[in-house]
Amino acid sequence: MHGGRRRFIFVVALFFGAWVLTSLPTFAAPFQPGDVFFTYGGNRIAHIYGSTLESLTMPESYSFAATTTVNLQGGGIALDEEGNLYVTFGTGTAGIRGIIKFHKNGEKAKILTVGTSPDFRGIAAKYGKVAVATPNGVRIYDSDLNTLLQTLSGNYRYVAFDNQGNLYALHQTRVDRYRWDGSSYILDGTIISGLSDAITISVDTNGNLYIVERGGADANKVLKFTRTTSGFNRSTISRPPEITGGNLFGLAYEPGIDTFFVINSSSTMTDLLKFRTNDGTMSIVFKGRTDITNARWLAVYPTPEPTIAILLAAGWLFLRRRSRR
Image 1 (cartoon, rainbow, N blue to C red):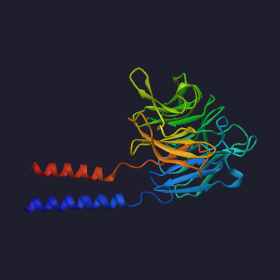
Image 2: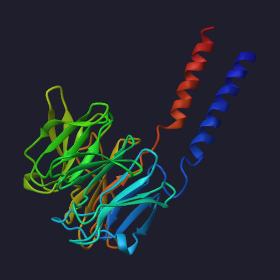
Image 3: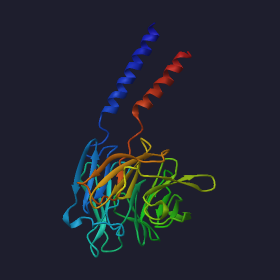
Image 4: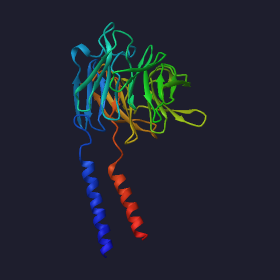
């Protein structure tokens, strides 16, 4: 009876502890796990948390150049594991290019400028590195944007890291992989070809690749490339039938809920869509927002593993060991 009471008290305390830990804010406001960010309107960042959409306007001298379907300059956006936000920008055809880093508390932490060339396009941040796609190659900086660590040649639109530290660089018609050898990135070769007008790439937890295609027979679909022992199997993920206007653009993965978010936008409205890795069709988060136009790149702040699940698993193992004594 006495032992049973102790086990009961332990389980109650376990649940209480899990509730406390999952109720406490993980990071300082305004950036929290699960928040969605995307660039839109030429010079703004949308920050979505819960049911709230906050618009962050860039300083006038560092605003994005307005992006269109053929002008990919500026507006790439990414979050690192600590919640710091990185945004590429340009100030016109012959204007200055660079990256703005926002600390997870929302304050601007660093502005890196590189002159009038090359265009800074898509961006990825992970493992203490920030990779930026440009028409002259991928530039890789340290996370503080103080040092250019490496430049990879090629004309690229977007970049993504996998969980092994490899880098995927998206060209309009192909994907090149760069392997991390412990000190630098080495070209592994072209792993996907035959794309038409690819614009964004992302990677899930299992190393499968997802690409937004804007041209050819698969226009306005997400192409999924499932990793196999000999390469990749290709499948497609379609927009919901209710979504008939606009074009797909930004794509970002939230591993905590195994879900991708996708921007569908035009000069008059924006939709936010989502799908899980085993879905063949997207679902709608919100539809037809006329106060958001020309939305482009997209980033999601990854949520941590559920604390309660870890605590309950530990508690179950503890009780099982106690019952065997």
